[in-house]
Length: 333
Ligand code: PHB
Ligand code: FE
Image (tube, rainbow, N blue to C red; front, side):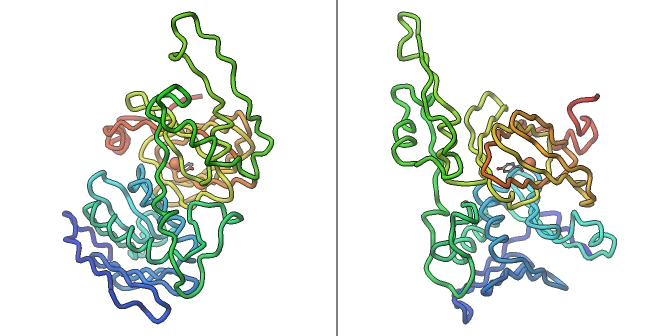
């Protein structure tokens, strides 16, 4: 039977200091308990347990931690995930899975976001072995499997480079480091690295600038991790490089737009609540798509590609969509 706590569970957080025989700690919060073995993450909840390949689990966990539970739903797979209420967060089993709901096998518990974040961060750190980078494409990292060996805290704590003003203008801290410290990715060697010519009118030198965004993004060392490149009020323009599969199925709580800047991504688009398939979208370079507010999606990028994700950060939107005050799609054809 589904349990819905109205106020956040007072997080009984237990990080078992005694590691299991494979060297991994067990983590618990509320009525959930997490264990890992050589190949799998085991999620125990009242009445049953769920199992996921540990590499897929850690890749999804990295996004959930890195993005502060993101917009709307982060489905780790078709069963387990989190739903962001921006201050509190629900952790669920089968809440967005028609079969689980019909069989009354869904389970959900509400937490204060900082409490769940603390457990997720500790679990990610303890369960990530040396050589495995959950932000890297599978072809660019070692394996997650086996007994506990070492750690990779540096990769997990990676800080995004923040430009202090437009990239390339004097005083921007991000400019030289992006060129010097980050090689062009092996799959973007065809991306031209030349810089645009700038002809500022007299008196405006040092204030007018342009840079090669493709060259800039071609040096990204992570996959499926949108970074804000411009922010105007609630408009967030986020560039990202994508290779292999988006490690989560994202359930939207607002419309988001995709601009495919290079190469190709294939999207599975399913109903947000039931998981029933709704569309298959193949986006080629130059294609633009609006992802509706009532779907979940997972992308597949056979070759590393560049994607711009355009998000509306207005905090009023989830409520307006859930009340039906806004249509879930932005355009009527
Ligand atoms: C999304 O869920 O919309 C999403 C997440 C990460 C990406 C791209 C898209 O890198
Ligand atoms: Fe999304």
